Length: 178
Image (cartoon, rainbow, N blue to C red):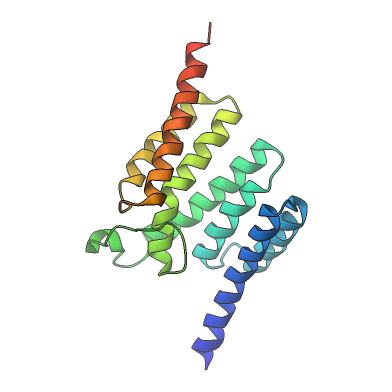
């Protein structure tokens, strides 16, 4: 019974994150940010890393200030890295299969691994927005490496295309510096 209650609680967190995402995509950025903020405080710093990563990843998109967006993207990355490296017998050492469809409802380790290319890409875009091209390029390199852990498919190709677009934008900016 306790495990069932725990699973329902976890599903409830993801459901609430999903509801906030829907609000954001429908144009209610402030309400999405308010709900995600409330949920962030409920989860707390010792809460489930998958929940913290997912929430922070989407909370970043609701921010008005690029510095705040970077802060949330870095929180998401920190939660994902902590979860992956602290897991006993992590899947990387056990030859985990490649991830097909990006973050979604599956084992949290697999879903978090699917977040890495997107997290690095988002952080690269944050750095580019803050006029920190060297940091942006470093994150783009990490995004390129981590995208190779994904199985071929739309998610992987979409990330590769986005990485290439940001690279072109950064290269264009470099060409315009005196």
